[in-house]
Structure formats: C-alpha cells, structure tokens
Length: 393
Image (cartoon, helix red, strand yellow):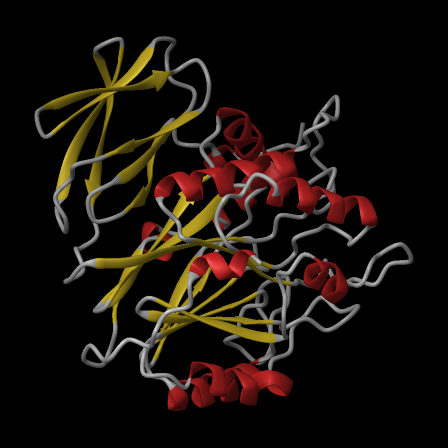
C-alpha cells in the first residue's frame, strides 16, 4: 500500500455536490449500522454504513444553508451544512452530462507506484466506473452525454472494444471528442478519428449541435503523439460554430493554460494560443461555458463573460461526472461522484496517490465543482433545436 501523509485522510462524511434543491452526501468509515440524516426536521434513511456509500438529499431550499445531522442507527455521529445553489429563472430546457478521462483498458493508477486491483476483475475499474457514471447521468435526467477525450488508455483494439460495451448501455445520444491517450500513436494503437467515426460519434474536428436553448460544440484539441493540446489551427472554425444567437457550451479535452510556463502536469493548450482563442471566441459569442478534462481535477475560473471549467476523471479520485442544467437565463454545472459502492471503494483508494496529495489536490473546492452562471445578454430567440434522437444515428 502506498504511504500517505497524516493530513491527507478522507473525511468520513462529506457533502460533495450541490444543486438548487438537491445535494449529494458521501460517507465511508462510519460505525456499523444504518446511515440516516435529519434535515429541516425530516428524517431520511440513506443506506448501510458497512461500505462506502452516497445518496441524494432532496427537497432543499435554493440559495440557502441547511444543517444536517448524520446518524447511525438513529444516533447522531456528526453534523454538516449544505449550502445550495440559487435557482435559475424560467423553465429548465435541457440537461447535458459529460464524462472525461475514462482510460478504458488501464490496469493501474499512480505516478510512480501503480495501484492495481487484485485479482484483476473481468469488469475492470475504468469500464466499471464509466458505466456507473453514464448510468447515473441518465438517471439524473441527461438528454445528451458528451465524452471529453481520453476515452481509451492507449487506443489498442481491445480498448476500443470496451467503448462498444459502454455505448451498449447508454440509452441517450452521445457525442465524443478524442484525447491525447486516444491519439498516442503506439505500435498497436488504432486511429482515433476512424474509430470514433465508425461509431458515429465524431463527424468533424469541430462539431456542433443546436439543442433547446444552447449550441453544443465539440473541439478536437489533440496533436497526434503528443500529450499537450493545440487550438490555433481550428479556432476560426470554433468561432464560426459559436457565432449564434444562443449561448454556446464548448467541450474540449485539453484545458487552456493560464501561464506562459505551465505550473501543473499534464500540459494543456499553451497560453499563447489559449489567450488568442478566448478573445476570438468571446468576440463571436459572449455567452460561453468552456469545459475540458485532461487534468483529472475539478477547477473553475472566469475570463471576461466566459465560465471555464475542468472536470475530473471517472476512474480515479474523486471519480466524477458533470451535469449541466440549461435554462434560457443561464446554466448550472454540478460535478457528482460516481456513487456505486464498488466504484467509491476504488476511487477512495486512489486518493492515496502521490503520498495522499492527489486526494487533496484533485477534488477542488465545492465552488470548483458546482456553480451557476447566468448568461450575460438578455434572453434571445432560440435557434430551432436538433432532434436529439437524430444524434443516435
């Protein structure tokens, strides 16, 4: 087992995600018994404390603080506070979910000393976590699922076959863009563009779909055989794609660097390209949400009127997927943990990577995971949406 520092232990109970009326509670290491909560004078039974678990707390007041007593067999063991996101005006139009950095085919996680499952199960942790994330997104109400790259670990034929197994379980339309692990170019690696197009998932390097209230844009930022990203060669196409009366949500694999010399690994899209790309995109459409994967961490930043987010991997700590609730007046991002107990058990274990520092670094703050953005312009005419069912073709 990898050594960990004493300050990197996991909280036995945490409020991991919040929406306007719902919060996700995660627990592990509680005394044996039945886990419950008392909130706003209401009692709820959540599950068994014998394993790591997660559950939703619903019927909360928007933009409010809620005191929560966590109980085991009716006895209060700890208290937490839930601060919900504000509600967005108007009716909900659409729900979109994303999963990133699946690394299908990976057999161990870690920088120096790899963590592995022993014995290796037939349904290894990358596929197991990806399936659970997709299933949770569908149950949450997603109308569309976007795969934001690093779908496979090395692009081998057997890794792409795992994608087929994943897709077979997803009953909603799927969009996909490749990541650097898909285009790594090893001897046995298959061409990522051909593999995705063969599955009807990647029609162009810059693809877009008009759905109700928003334009969804997927951008290929990969450089074959390289870990870092590029956007300059495609920025004109991106600007054209987002030049629309509606807000735009832009999904890509590589994050946009904020410094001339990157301060974290892995390297994203260099600042000299990222800065110009952001300016050109904002000139085309000021109402932007840009979201990437690649870093396996959760972070939020603002650039002028654009909201820019990074969302972590499905298969290592904290093991997440992201949901986006679209309204005419704005959008809310919520990053949730993959909640199946056998996935939580694995992803909790991977918090110990890099001596436990990974477990402190990767989740980000609540404000890095769950955030509400109101569009900067008044509500505008909605472009006639694409029938989502057509994306299944």
